[in-house]
Image 1 (cartoon, rainbow, N blue to C red):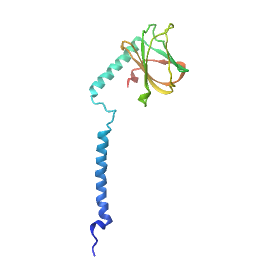
Image 2: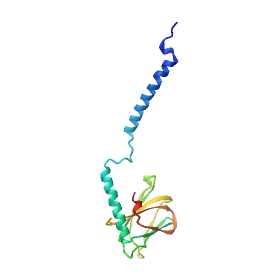
Image 3: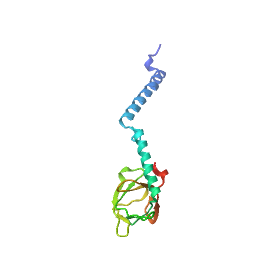
Length: 164
């Protein structure tokens, strides 16, 4: 006597393999459309022009000879100009964490009587950071990856290869 097709294990194997591929494909399409990759840039041309502008700001800082010394000791941030003898009325200082955007923070610092910029930070800042220093007018820029805290002054210098 012949057994019906649905009682044969080989028949189910033939149906389950393509069915699982269809389910996996539909699941992939749903995941791709509900959670888009945030790293993909929609208007890459404008982004490229912005990168070139940032590089020109770093080159401007290089041409002007602007350099800083940075120290973070006992939660006190000290930034002192070391490149040129110029007074800066205000510095914008951004700290970017490499992996956790919610840890990023910013200061607008004015110089004290000795020409140094000081700020007390009310939370611990440890590990690797990308620091960006710009003047109020935003016509030059310095950015560098550093490891904090730093008990001794470290040099923050404009380097065009660090613009990425």
